[in-house]
Length: 328
Image (tube, rainbow, N blue to C red; front, side):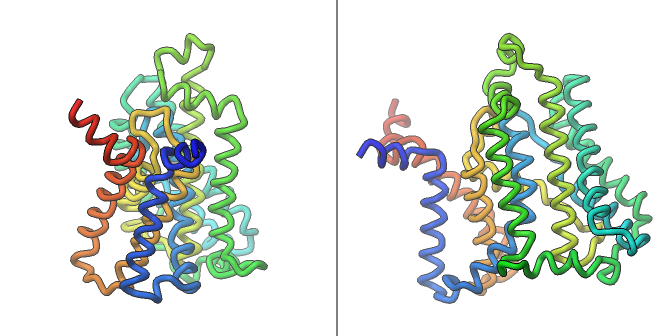
């Protein structure tokens, strides 16, 4: 009985309840939502967000935030796309290396500026959001990477694999698993939580805050770069004017819904995965329900707020616990 009570008090329980309720309600209204075909569409919708969310989760846990990941995604996708376009004879791995390493380099700059100059990460990354977007236009000459410039093997990664699950889905969940291993079983992973829980006390415990924080931003940038390649695989083109624009807010919403605290020190990979799955389900459900495009953004935002309220209610011991706190 105690085990069941602990399960439902876990941070992930709130978002899991919301996800199950959402699928059940939409399934009752539109039965075709609960089908294998729809599940496949949802799975295709989540890899882009899931990969970047793993990096953003680590940044938030360290009591920072990275608002520049949308621009990093766009920059990395363009950089890799230019390699594919200008050197079609080069192997796919070169484009992947360029995309991931360029993202890591931009993330490293974020971490360096935040730690060396002791500036708030929200201000630094708000500035680099615009800076990196500008560099993206300069690098590309404002020219789009056309579908015929994207290699066919990369496009196929969003369509199939030997086990009939698209490669980009497998890659995304492999990244989530690797992130869980990193945060759970490495000393650096545990130090990220310690820094987020109490930045002032972390140096007293022998933690080197500066290199760990730079590493966190670098990993976030690298994963945003990988998300850029997933974007190119899924959509088959890269436009410097729209690729990654506003992407950071979707990712942050998914991470926060997944139970990651914006005050640092708290969060899990499982919760983040559930948050991403909920957002992916909402994105797919609204068109199936025939919701007008004019209403989709409003409903999307309302569902995010409801999910946050349910998550907070469950974590505080249900409605009774919430009311008790309100009356205290």
